Amino acid sequence: MSNCVVYHQTVFLGRPEPPNFPAVSRRWPILSLQSRDKLFGLSSKEAAALQFLPKAASASVSGSGAEYSEQLLGEKLKKKSQRIAGVDQDELVEPAILADPDSCFCEFKGVQIHHKVCDEESAAHNTLQDGTSSQFSYQTKKLGLPMILLHGFGASVYSWSRVMKQLAQVTGSKVLAFDRPAFGLTSRVDYPKNSSPGVEHINPYSMIFSVLATLYFIDFLAAKKTILVGHSAGALVAADTYFAAPERVAALVLVAPAIIAPRSSQKAVKEKESGRNGVSQDDRSDANIRENPMTRLSRMFSKLSRNVMQAILNLVKGMGDMFSSIYKKALSAFLRSALGVMLVRMVIDKFGIAAIRNSWYDSNQITDHVLHGYTKPLRVKSWDRALVEFTAATLTDSVPQSKPLSKRLHEISCPVLIITGDSDRLVPSWNAERLSRAIPGSCLEVVKNCGHLPQEEKSEEFVSIVENFLQRSFGGSEVQLLQAAS
Image (cartoon, rainbow, N blue to C red; front, side, top):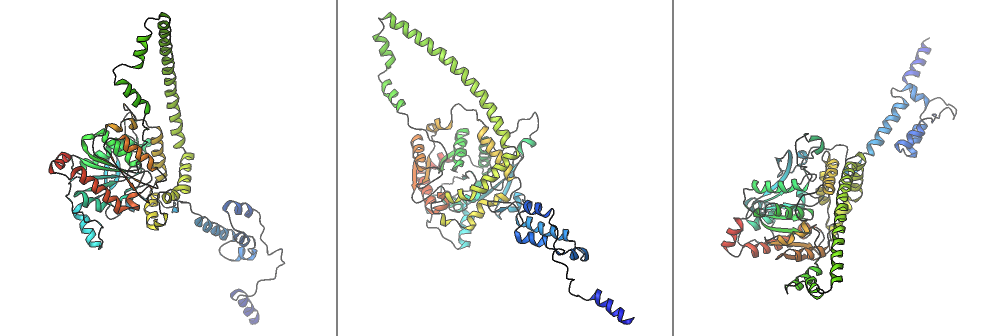
């Protein structure tokens, strides 16, 4: 009897070898695991581990074979968490959580705008504290004019981080950079849903909002006038801000400007030359054929035909405007759909990093720190929706104005500096050359061995070019400075 008890204790408390089941009985039926393997992308080893689990283990241990398989699947899914341009999309956060120690936020028309401000004193203090020194001593006369920096598409305040301190020392005043809605750490607003019915709201992702925000920051700096520096698409904001309030802009610095420059019209030149004599070609022809009645009748018929054709063209134009409105609404609806959001995410994931590398002349200078600076906004909640809204506003919004920007460039009367890289693959340097010819009195500077980001790739040379331009424009006399400030 006692031997029997000892035997049972040995069975339940010890660890004997498992019974030698036939090979077939040791296999687990595959059943639904095949579909699970295909659905979750399990490797052959992981699938084999699930298929050959012993039945005895599923009956004796506390966790069943099914629970173990679910654990493996969960780990597999966790490993395959979605990433966009190398940024994990599982835990998106509010912009304030990603803010830097010198980040600031202010509310403008319901949007929390992220910005940074640097003045001459803090710039000099930080330079001494960091133990760094600039190649330039900035001993020239301080202008006392504040400066606002406007980033381009896909960029943020970060793109100005290498030059903000130096520019503050050059101007002898405050330099401010802010993130436009849909970029950087500015809050993402769900514009269509947050709009109150019957109340007209400004789309925060529109060009008008960016212009108003720029004017707001001019008041924020307590300045009558300021220098606007716009990079790429930010140059559009700078130019539109000038035309909205030219009395508030002392000078424009357009860096790799994404402004379509008009082509020089030879026809206009010929018309001006022929018009100097005071008699047009048509008038001279009329004088020659005044005596011929048949020719006069033909001319009257030709004039009638032109009027009829003009009426038809006006009708076609009206129909075109109607179809254009329908097209814009359809495009806007598509972009705001789930498919549109997915498309934007795919584009950013596939081409985002490539676009950053393509913006530099020497991509070897792009460090992990640079990539992190440009991809950090992809950790902000609703970044994809905001980018969709910005794209929709850019493609469909129309600003009512008398003439397009390309035909108003000759009206700019303030000092203008245009900076471009000779190897810019995004906005070719020849466009900047055309732009300089379209703006009277503008200065063009081409930076050698430089891509789309002169303020980052050639920061010291960029600051030197801006400094020389400002000294030529405002540093000549106290009268010039007073005129610029007032």
